[in-house]
Length: 308
Image 1 (cartoon, rainbow, N blue to C red):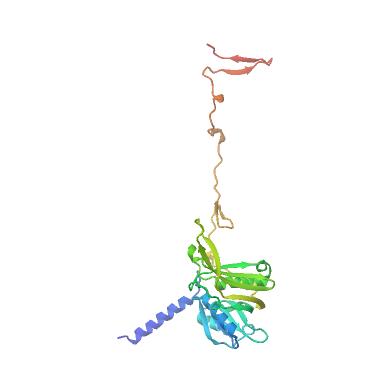
Image 2 (cartoon, helix red, strand yellow):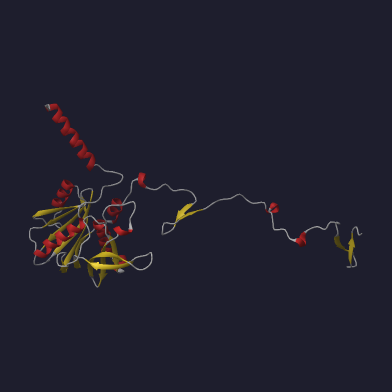
């Protein structure tokens, strides 16, 4: 029989565990995304949200009901749902005459909107339309960005960072070759962003290294960039700041190159070269009789020593 005091203690402990799970941590949890649709949506937007949710699972929450809100005008509704579901990423889909087939990718910092980028769908092929075998749920994808615009244009730089946050998945200590089977490819060309999803197939090549083939599995998107809401440089820098406890301690005389190779510098004491052991040669040996050569004042060579 449970007493009233026992039930109260259980509730207190449960609430304490819940608050501890939401508290700030040195190593943050895997970023979760909430996917929702607005008051007016099209069949294209609804299916696109479902397909992106299938790519993001299990680190995503799909809201099936309509949410009448406009993120660029008022983001309080998004911030409320973010705090309720503990999500730091969101995807909002809407459709209207002025901006048809609209997707808004965004992220939050301290439960406040940090970045929002609006993309319009110009061409879309769903997962179900491509009849191939799919990758298992929860597969960590490899992200590839093609096009120099991702390194030159400020808006596309921020979009690249946002897409990396959205699709990167959990941080893993090691990777096995067979687990590298899902590729998300983004291309920036002529003012458009092309998103393609491939499955990596390892074929026999006759040697130790397998031959790699790519098979498109969907979904496929052709995006055009519309509106943007980007954080200021100061706020963006604050959101990327790391705690001091996570910063690696600098070790003397140790450095790393761009590929992570470790280099060490060794300091040695000054060497006395007079005591250095060199290679012995027959021409430098002394003779048994102690013979040496000198020259007299006239320049003639004179030899002194014991002769037998």
